[in-house]
Every structure is written in structure tokens, then in C-alpha cells.
Length: 263
Image 1 (spheres, rainbow, N blue to C red):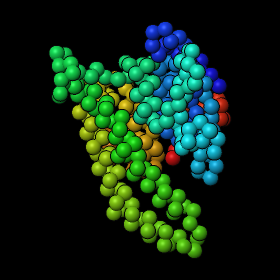
Image 2: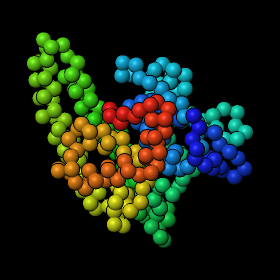
Image 3: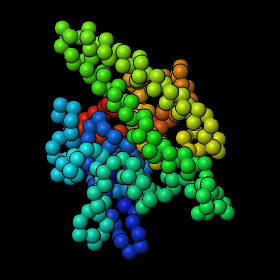
Image 4: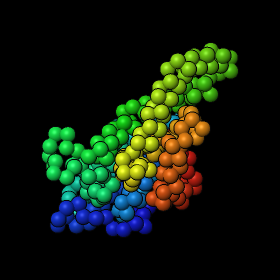
């Protein structure tokens, strides 16, 4: 389907209208790319896919060799072939660079343009959290998913063994690391510059959109509670309540009939 947003902005002088296609997979990181497109008000085509036995369908490999989601293709007017982008961070940076630079903070302090250590705190946070979600937080959430799946799907006669193994891994490794990360993020929200509200300051950035998926998943099943991490929990609630995010969710409900944000 095609969104009801504004026509795609030009990617550069004289390039005209750009065709953007999002290849969306259920229960995946692709939902935040859909939110980003809604936030940017870029006209796009949405192609949705369902998982089979928890994995992406082989049809996605026709778009990108790894067959993972999200995938975005971008084709400028007059271009012979579309540019195919994979990896959430790259997709987010590329779309913001061309269609919504306001979702990235100002890079340099006044009078320090191009200087080493001349960057603003907002921009350094932005670059950090563009990588932190996938590089640090998400692996722990994937481990949590695998341990939960192992526990839930084990045959009944070996459940005592799998429960003991997964329980030990959670108590000795997983939970301490999740708690350490949630405490870190709680402090980052509380100390965000310019009055805070978001990870990089007082306004939404692409980094917040990228962080919405792992934190939304953590709020559901990984121990992110309002009692233990009130500022972080409220931050996730604010992200989920944003109009662009709600439009993205509604778009999936219209196409798929429902939306499940869990891992």
C-alpha cells in the first residue's frame, strides 16, 4: 500500500520525486522504519511479510541476499535501478540525511565547526544511541527471547532441566546485564541536555525512533518496569503515544488486521 503522507521530498537538486519502498516483516525492527517514514511524511509503498516458524520468508532474499527486515529501496527520478538499503541504522541515517535532517541534532557548537571535540552533546548522544540499540542492548533481548523460547517449547519430560539451565543463565548473566543497561538509560533520560524528554535532548531524533523497538520489547518481557525505572518507562510511554508512531501502528492494523509489538 502507499501511505497518505506528503510526496517524497527531493533527494537533491533536480532529482525530482523519489520512490521509497519499505519491506516490512512482522515482529521485527521494521516497525520503527515505518514510524520514521511517517514522521518524515515521505510517500512510500509498504510491502508486508509474515514469518514462518519464527523466521523471515525466503521471498525477502529476492530483495536483499540476507533476507532480513527492514529493507528499504530508494529510487530517484531518472535512476535506472533502486538503491537497496539494509540495517536499521544505515536506513535511518540515509532517510534522515535526505528527507528529514531536523531529526538529527546540530553537530557542532557555534564557532567550533569541524574541530575535534567541537561536537554538541546532543549530536554525540545521537551518534552513540544510533549504534547502542543494536550493538549493546538488542543482543541481550535476543538472548532473553531464545531462553524464553527454549523454556516454553521444551518437551515436558525435560522441562526441569531446561528450566534450570535457562534460570541459571538469566540470574547469573542476562538479568544483571539488562539491569545495568536499564539503569544506564534511566540516568541518560534524567540528564539529557536542554531540559531532556528524549535521549538526546528536548526533541525527538532518529536515535529515539531506533531505540523504540528494543525498549518497547523490554517493557513487555525483560524487566523494564515503572517501579524500578520510572523515567525510562515514562520515556517509552511517550514514544508509543507519539502521533507518527500511532499512525505507523494503525497502518499495520489496516493491512494485517492486527499489530503485535513483541519479540
